[in-house]
Image (cartoon, rainbow, N blue to C red):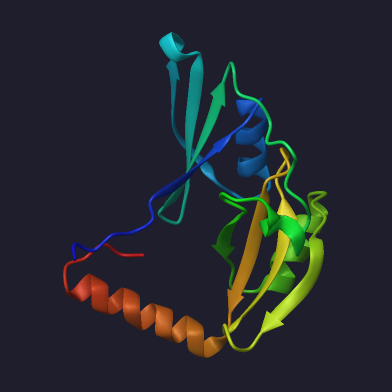
Length: 158
């Protein structure tokens, strides 16, 4: 099979400028590019951090998800994308930093020794769930080894 790598996730928003500011100010993403498609009444902004992109999309005739996504653990009761996850080196430090920016965590911190990670959720300014994940040391080392092997084989890094 041809190697694949997740490249970006698209998030629809009613206010693209507010979302750009939030992802820049709160999570440290950088604006890569913007483009308007007037024929579709659509504006996009591509945000980037550590090789991963978020495509923010504002479309004139878009409507909110109904019913809205619940807080964890009930967030997966609606089919479709329930959240996206970002890796952090230190979950507690990341949460403390986010608290200084007015971001409140959603649900309790979870430590899962079977999955070899700990995590906590936050919501962006539109209410989309973002899972902050810290890998346990052995899982982080395993991930680094997989990335190195993939790179050595000429595949995409990530």
